[in-house]
Length: 449
Ligand SMILES: *Cc1c(COP(=O)(O)O)cnc(C)c1O
Image (cartoon, rainbow, N blue to C red; front, top):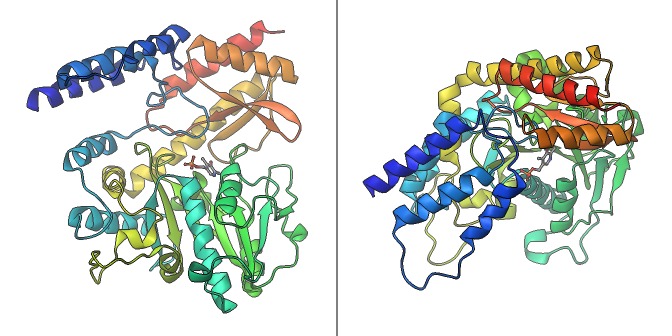
């Protein structure tokens, strides 16, 4: 075991060191080489050293270098050193975080991490929360808590009776709602098309003046951090109005919720902490390994009512049981890496990382604008949308940039315009990475006329 883990650690280190030189996206040859892993199922055992050597030599070159500093696609985030190391140790621990009996350390570390998160994000004290796979499941969990609370007020027990014959829940989302939220609504039996879409402004913010009539059976879903522009819905206005009518407000804050830790961003995030539930991803801006999402619920009882189970052989402690707050029973102890990430960064480290990313985004935007390209969004966070002039040219620049291997950005459509999307969210990104990537963008765009 010692030799195996030492060798694996060498491979991993070698891999991370190589990222600075390696193409950010694997070549077609390296991807094809993965075929070599597709042997018939071995009949006999194989030495683990041999298994891992094969995985490294064939697998590592075929990875997307999102752990490096020049991956700006989606909002992926890197992996902080402390979080990676904690992930290894947690792998060795092999804890089942389902309850206190299966893993006291898993449950306790999770509690500490949640307390820290609630404090860091300035969410209401006493929030309930659960560790899930990602923002899609966090959105799903928030919607289930809302569904419980809204129907309970109507005297309907949705957990036992289901939705057949239940009072209707009116669902209100912004025109810019994330696809994962629609998926979550459909999983929750509320339907992905049976909803009211509120028009948005030129940055993608819901227009409070265009909100429909809200009731005490309404679920309003707002966004902290639009995937294209990075913008935030006007939480104050919407939540105040919604709460006057007894509606539930859920926040999809997959990456944007992290901005709540930074008082300098209060102009964007003000009011968000008044919502009823919040979904976020630790695997995005907190830079922990995949997969790691979190659902917070202002009133823990609602989340617990939607999730709790009991069975004769399950013994529960008086204290918080992790599985009472998540769809899963058995699962990995995600709280360990979150704890390690927060411990290593501290509040100031987290704020500094976010601000650095916002600064890098502004540098990209000003560099592109100075060269005459059109930045389509107000760069208020870590997201930049740029058009290189026309859909065809923009798509060609994106494709050439991706092939160059210098950095990786994806494409998007923003209010009728084709754009390249730059998202800065990795701790590993340096000023040199930004400089080098910007240079590649400008060179490639300059070539295409
Ligand atoms: C990434 C993202 C999601 C989905 O998160 P997963 O972790 O992929 O499930 C939802 N909403 C927004 C705004 C996102 O950026």
